[in-house]
Image 1 (cartoon, rainbow, N blue to C red):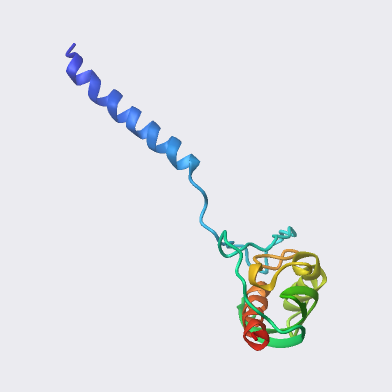
Image 2: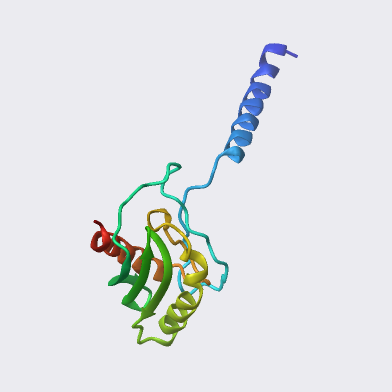
Length: 154
């Protein structure tokens, strides 16, 4: 048997094993594909947008904004009210306007859980992914937070 020929399959197998091992070490892409129609009821903590804390300057007070987002039932809206003190969210309220029973359920679950996720956090450091199984309401919430940041900027 030609030993030169036997080395090629071994080299290919070794290379594939190495690639597989390295792929297993990589981090997953950020983002959740679970829709509001899913059954997952986990809560995802907010993530900082980068490792260095941002230092936005905001006027203390209460701010309210509404934002739309897309769900399987069409365009939905969530109204968000936050109270800020030194850039930190001290209170939050989220109210949805869903007409569909499924949308109402997810908006209510989101509203019931959002305080546990964002109260006590710097407004610059939050980006909500999923709260109480609702992953789409967070899109509207995050958009409303961006508007609130613009309103509160001093």
